[in-house]
Image (spheres, rainbow, N blue to C red):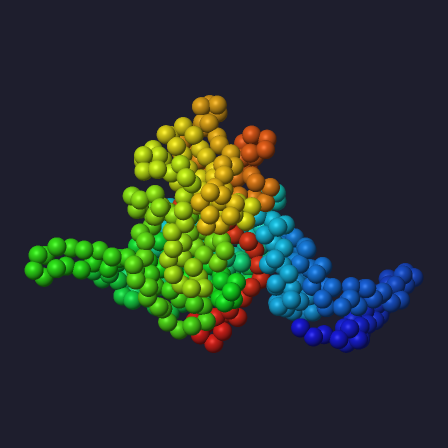
Length: 433
């Protein structure tokens, strides 16, 4: 964005003098003495562009929205690449937001909420599948967003990366993915996947992330292929991965993908996506997909993870804590432990961060710790309790805090960093609305 300060000053002075003249005329008509002869010029319009970008990137989200409504110059500023990059880098440090997907009533209404836990809800989006109507609400004002209308009732939150949301739409027999940014009210539809058949079905796992090496956003979708031996009629299954790079017009297939056991709550680290597999071998428990090389690898688990030990784990998840890979699990239905891999890929670097003995907390149950959501920068853990509350646990203070109820109809919750990145700019010429 290039706006010369002299042009800003000239345009503003014309507006200021016109407003001052109108104000003086009104005061003379009222018989009062003119109090204002000329509005003063704000210093902020004289600041260099890079300084304005730096200031705006430090503001709360609602303040940015208010500023963007002041004048066209501020509106263009929040669309500038310099501001977008600064805000993206700082938003994850200044705030932590969540995306909730609810299924409410018989109409299968979907709602996506994003908020800072220290403030009232910043924004939320609703989609009524019956009326094909999508709205996004920000603070005091509401935006109707027709571009978010999808003709399907079944969609899944795949993941969030840099403020972009990836959603999977099970529109059989032609499922598809979409990338959206609720803040910018933009969405794009990715190229269609292969047609789903009884012999080609999509596994319940997808991933979305950004590769710093190639500077590309990628989506991975796992598909189960079934084949039948014509001689013995025996059925065999294998898992493959379809990979798409945003901005391209096709999907690539990668053979021999590890079978996922469950979705990770914070899977992206070091340019790779991570998940827990269904393998019985401890060395194949944690799988990773390198977004740059597009290859699968196994990450070694902690040394005490023997086959007998794993059999006593009732729930296990993968996340990121202090920029390191971590695992959270419930052992023998009585203890919740968090282990941190201080040096990525090194088995000996696993160390226990903290443990929660559920016997010492009378109101704590197994269901309360099965859905971790996010580790904060201070080490606190957010999770969804069995009573449908967003709860924070402080390992330093050994205390729990109920942040807010999320309602009995929740289906999915993921962490989300707000940004002003445009999915259409990322996809370029191949963007499909």
